[in-house]
Amino acid sequence: MNIVFTSDDNFVRQTAAAIISIYENNKDEDVRIYVLSKGISAENQSILTDMAKDYGQDLSFIELKDVDSFFGGEIDTGGWDNIVLARLFIDRILPSDVHRVLYLDGDVIVRHSLKELWETDLQGNVLGMVQEPTIKKERKATLGMATDGKYFNAGIILMDLDAWRQKNAGKRIVDFYKAHDCKLFANDQDAINGELQHEIYPLDLKYNYCNTYYFYPYSAIRKMIGNDSYYSKEYYEQMVKDPYIVHYLGEERPWREGNDHVFREDFAKYYNMTYYGKQSDRDDGVFELGWKRYYTFWNLFNKMMKPFPMLRLRIINTLIPFVLDLRKKKK
Image (cartoon, rainbow, N blue to C red; front, side, top):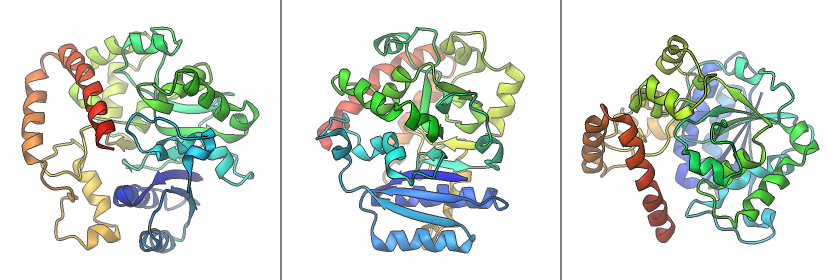
């Protein structure tokens, strides 16, 4: 099983928790982890390597000194660190004898075995991804997608690298990104969905749970999705109650003081198994302080909006561009 992360020193603690959650729940599997690094220190690399050795697993680092060089020059990422784009070049970065990989964002926790996911038949598609429900129809249209088409989250991607290489998918995605003047709302995620819209196999929601499924009821999710092929209510409720992979998206960061993520204890559990957690004097997995006031207002907003899910969606979609502009100015 080949698993890929991208990380730097700013996110290495979260990545360590994700990695140890994989080891703990896949003890009968041979897991080969590649960390695409942007300046991870020798000390932190040693910590992650020793952790892998404790489980009898292989973990290696591939240093990405200049991500922009893959694009042929500097590229606008809208305020995000350009390491987020490294997944587009996995086929060029990893050894040629790696034929399939599971890409995971560092802000995930794995709660069950990945064997079933790893062995998923992609049925000739290049990627396997989980559908994201909160995407506006207008955004799909700007990507050349049908308004009722499936849009997928790029935080968890099962990649058929042979098909990726054969179909030159990486270059096509980059070309799509450049054709939109590098101004896409969600960078490579938008580009992946726009360019590969007919080459993505839909994975079960349980492999990419986020708090969207907590904030919005099933009826609202179905309305957002806009098609009749979504999960039954019974199956949906089963998956959101016991997901295989939790993805701590957006504001829902359990390592921030005051956060009330429904699966925050899962992060604390695995973080406390890492070297970083063991050195901490806290047992709640929190290491970013100063967020209590922010989350007081955030939690109040969510409580007030609970009866009005579609209004909440409109407000959130209105605020996100301002947040991204602020991040870009701070960079």
